[in-house]
Length: 88
Image 1 (cartoon, one colour):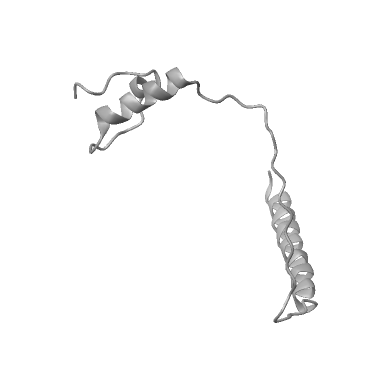
Image 2 (cartoon, rainbow, N blue to C red):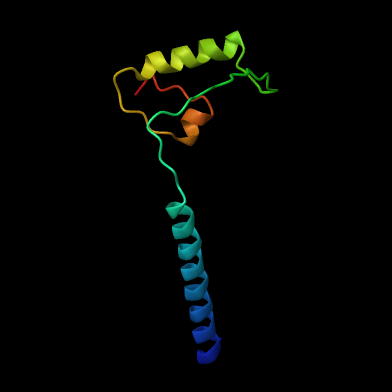
């Protein structure tokens, strides 16, 4: 990029940023503050298709956690593959 194009880009970036600031400032000026606002919430439970561990996998995880209790554990490939940490 030559010097002229760099200057144009800088000018365009600055102009764009300045216009965004102007838009944000105008929106900020229009905010109406209220001390009491009614709030409502609707909760919906979703059933998602995702994998969950079976009992065998949960038992394996419990054994792994028992083996590392009280020690600082780092994520490692060995751990991710299900390595035995009880010997350390």
